[in-house]
Image (tube, rainbow over all chains, first blue to last red):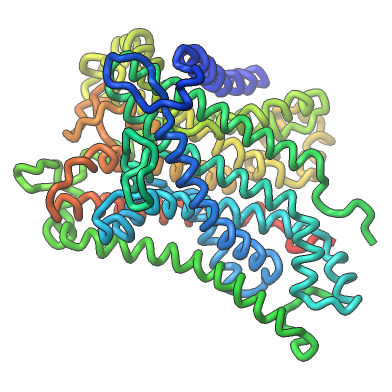
Length: 271
Length: 317
């Protein structure tokens, strides 16, 4: 029986290795300095680059982060510091539901909310969709990181006469801040890889972003667009973009490990 | 003494109230977001709801010339692909979870490394799985997996028709790969939440490792594992990009597992460029509404099952 379990483990890991191996081997030919400085090529004409996607992704993920972090950290603080309220219960439950939601539905929501009224695909719409996707991760991680801070710290702070809000900022959040940073990085990682919502909100452009209310490219969209087209050089561009994306994810995940590893969450000596 | 917000209001400073209101607003925002999602999707699809009514879900034509947009084939696709994904993904995910929650010291060392690997599996964006699926997996399925399946199980409706690789079955397989991390992560938490006393009692009766798992741990964790499965189902239903590369994107009713098909999610992505009039646009939003309701029901049901078993404690003292 142990053998079957080990077999299932092996079966699960094989696709991961295959995917990464293929991404590296098929994507490497496209990688060069120009891959990061040029725009995509025409069909059958070399590898060009994915500058439009890189700049578009940076723009939209950046804006999305600016929207999602205050909301997410705020909600996380509320869930952690006032857990007994009914709002906390309902909202954190809905937060968990939102975290697993089909991202295409979130994209459609932003479509009806932003794209339809403004009558154009836009970077703003894409950023809003990404923000909604990042929000639950940030809120959840913030809540977990702050809950780990021992209550004795809070009590000691308030026993010294420090008001509750200052306790939360100076004591609780600063103790849990590596957890907060982790949540934000995880949210960014998730948002960078999302494609479906951007298909229906940001569209695509063969050039770097031209305006906040214009169609905007993104790296995942390039993978989708160029990977399904069928031209061999475009397929290699898609693999190259996939390689860039995977490398970015790796860096983000390693940074997360760095944060969790170096700083311990919570205080060692407890009263 | 708990850090309650209700006590000591007279000695609390105004800053407390401000902070609570501000972060409370963020919490309200999340609730409003989910409710707003439902409202927007409903209003955006109203034209389609009025026009097709229940026929939207039961009809099989999606044709802009006929101005008819019905999604039964896509619904079938979603359910079929998800079923395949669960059939393949549950045993593997559960197996990994059992391995990861093993208490035997020798195994624990490898378990942590494995745990990281499975997390990495989840970190790869689905669009990359899709690309790999189209270029590597689909031809592999077409050449090596589907012909044998066809000869063994070639009943009409099951594995009949010419193997082409980009079909419903491959869609299910790639979904299985995507949901294994979800099922294994949640199941592992569930299995870890089973009290050690259960395991110890079985061991003291002389049971082997596997008997302990089979007779003490798994039965105890049954409802939680069911919840993990439903969460996996939710993930499978909502997955778009990985599936759209490999499912063949055919909006007609699939005749067998080897026919190209569509799911609700791939339907939206594929038809999105073809919406030229209000009705087709409303129809697409209605597909989103159907997905919204499906995802809501599945996720709430799953969360309730999982929550019961792994409710974490409030403050750590």
